Amino acid sequence: MSITLPPSCDRALAGAVGARAPADVRPHWVLVTTVLASSLAFIDGSVVNVGLPAIGRSLGAAGADLSWVVNGYLLPLSALLLIGGAAGDRFGRHRMLRFGIGLFALSSLMCALASNLYWLVAGRVLQGVGAALLMPSSLAILGSAFSGEARGRAIGIWAAAGAVAGALGPLLGGWLIDLAGWRLIFLINLPIASLALYFDGRCLHDKPDPARPALDLAGATLAVLGLGCVTWGLTVASASKSGDWLGLAVLAAGIVLLYLFLGAEHRARDKAMLPLSLFGSRNIVGLNLLTFFLYGAFGAVLVMVPFVLIKVAGYSATGAGAALFPLPVVMALASPLLGRVAGKIGPRLPLTFGPLIVAAGFLLATRIGPDSRYWTTTLPVVLVIALGMAAVVAPLTTAVLSTVEPRYTGIASGFNSAVARTSGLVATALLAVIFSRQGHALVVAFHAAALVAALAALVAAVCAVMLIEPPAVHG
Image 1: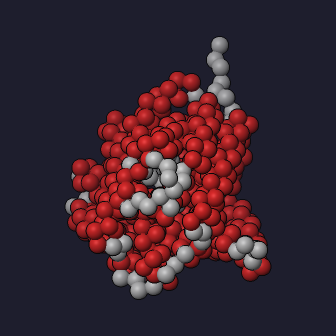
Image 2: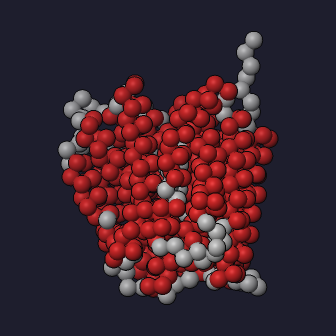
Image 3: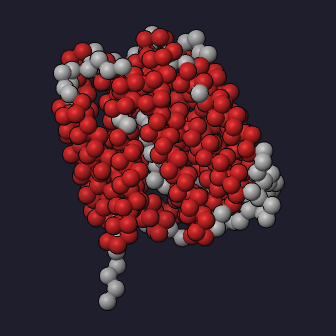
């Protein structure tokens, strides 16, 4: 799964940083560096969506195996996002940023040179680790380098750059695949990473803070192992027509490991990478459940649509990328306007009606087939989903930040972003049933998955109604 716009609470990570950078920092170089670093993660995620059919043909992969090209990246990114931010605080944000960029670049080269699927997935896993280190560090650096209105403008530029990267990623990736093959979609990361490292050298070189609490390595290990087992179990079980006892056993082990993760976080208390005290708020529970169901369905559709357009409707990789181009554009244009509306009426109504609109878009996706026309089938799906998601993005960020104490805003924002990516991880694991089908069977499976996605969006709307408290009325 890839989200073509940054998950809504990614930008809140920058706004949640309270510490100011020293006086010798050069804010304009900081902005350039953070935009370039974050673009690595945004471009690479969205590019891979249109590359799956070509990768499958080249490496002889399909079904459950092919889904790991996506999930190999999402797994470490989802599980390590919070500890990546803590590592930046303890060992130095610039140090973690440079390490994350360097690891991302080397693993991109590894992906481009992969001779089989196993090496490709290994490279994708390392890309996810690099992204988990560079994303929170880049946003924390951005937030500390600016203040007041300048911080708001900088975050706006960062978010706009993420939108542009998400919009151009599938289109550029499709063009490169049609031009010279799928390996180029990983090689384009190398010049971007080189520029980011160059500009990073012109920014502030901060120092580690040994006074920060030790990293929650036990929690991080259990989270990675638990999510990995759940992902593998779901992937294997969903690809098997009769179920798979090994997949179900691994899934059960993953659930046990995630339960142990919660126990470890409870014992760690304030030193935990995820303080469980956050979940004493009904709003936080509702917002993260909404995020899980809505972003999971959204991410699944973003993977399915280009795959079906290429495999069934005969689109080129460039054509499939262009088919999704209006989605991030409409979201980027509509989100600020709908965000201002939400600021006046509160987040509850937008967070209820937005998922309902998205569900309508998913229902429209059941009209996509081998003989469907883009302008009358795919484009309406893209536009309706974009409008629904645009209604959610800004209110979700606002609601998460306003629900917790100021000292927890960074953790709450980071966790919400991790939930968005984890939901994509789970959704993509279940898509193995799509990747293993051909012809008419693929169309039938896609339509069934679109109906499930619509149901998930409806559940997200119910979470908003039942769990998110309406704004207080002042007399």
